[in-house]
Amino acid sequence: MKSIEHNNDNLSRKNFLRVAATGATAIVGSSLLASCASEAPETQAPLTAAELSSPGEAVIAKYDLDKDTAYDLTMKKHAWLDWYHNAPVIHQYRVDPPYKIGYITSWRGEPWQEINIAEFTREVKRSTLITDFVHMDSAGSVDTEINNLKDMFTMWKAGDIQGIVVDPLDPMALVDTIEEIYNAGCPIILFNNAANTTKYTSFVSDDPWTYGTQGAEWLVKQLNGKGKILFFRGLKAYPIDDGRSGGALAVFDQNPGIEIAAIEYADWSYDKAKTVFMDMVAAHPEFDGIYSVGGQMSLAIIDAMVELGMDPGKYAHASEDQNGFLLKAMEYNIPAFAACHPSIVSAISVRLMEELLQGYPVIKAYFFPTPVIPSEKFKDYARPNAPEGIFVFTPLSDEECQEAVK
Image 1 (tube, helix red, strand yellow):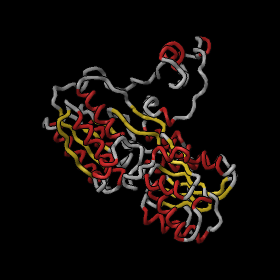
Image 2 (tube, one colour; image 1 turned 30 degrees about the vertical axis):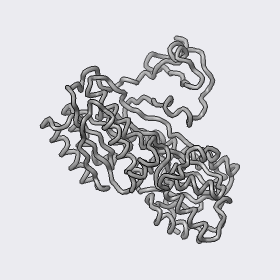
Image 3 (cartoon, rainbow, N blue to C red; image 1 turned 180 degrees about the vertical axis):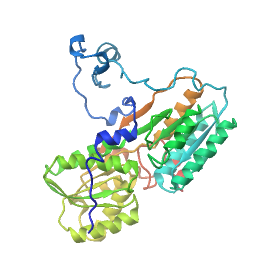
Image 4 (cartoon, rainbow, N blue to C red; image 1 turned 45 degrees about the horizontal axis):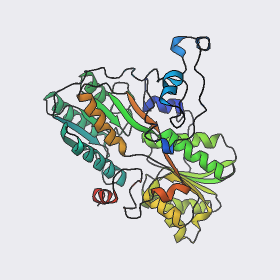
């Protein structure tokens, strides 16, 4: 069994966030996701002038929208000072409707991606101002995505589209093209994945680091701080995997009682994860828990356990909100935890683009902590009548999900 080394410096929160949203960001959306958010500190008194070393170093107190009233926000907590830093100004991108926008996805065929496309399509249909969009898929190829961006840039210059929404496949390779588009005055929204530049109009994503930390912290607590685990990563060098795995590894590094018996990339693939698990358990038959950055991999792990005559309920399992994983976890009474990767980021991007093209300023980064589902809440989120491959943190109906992934 070949183990994958991890480098804490490369995967530190500081370095990851430099990739995820370089420059000033505002963490918003907590009210939208409040039902899954962790509790914040008690309401604090406003900071006095003496407590602030200089205006540039002012610390804005964290707020809890379950406890702090709108008045508390105004008088005690205040807004993030960098909310509008480097963000579009009023009327900057204003054009007359109707609008046609460009939409670039990273690949197709996987349920999360198909639901993301369905949510984007539904949101465009609901808009009275955006009447059409051009969709180009990059088929997992960075070169194809660069060409897609260039083609859409040409369409923008010709007046055929008014803005671009893109899921960056690579945080570094796309930077020159994204910056060229941004510098020319074309609104460009990055969603789902990040690019290593400040020259984008807006960035929409949950924080993959908090996906990693929350699942890992739950697993440490579940194992009472001691035990051997098997760790399943996604795609090598993919930003979301770097973030999720980086957050989890940071937590495990702080808990010496947790031993990672094996760690491998399984590419978010059911088939590969099943094979990897079989190899892992042959080399490490004694283990206590599973950490996985993907629900489809976890579904494969549970199926493999059943095939091997193992009891899945004996192993604490931190993973993702894939419907099949939630349903199997309930079936086998698995102590489980699901971090979510909301496909709603595509729909949010549609609405932000609509605001931009009307001349409204929008936030530079719609960047929010990953919502989570503990096992006691699985029954409230699992979708028995929806495809097992979908991820449940979506507003689409069972029927819409079935249509999207058929």
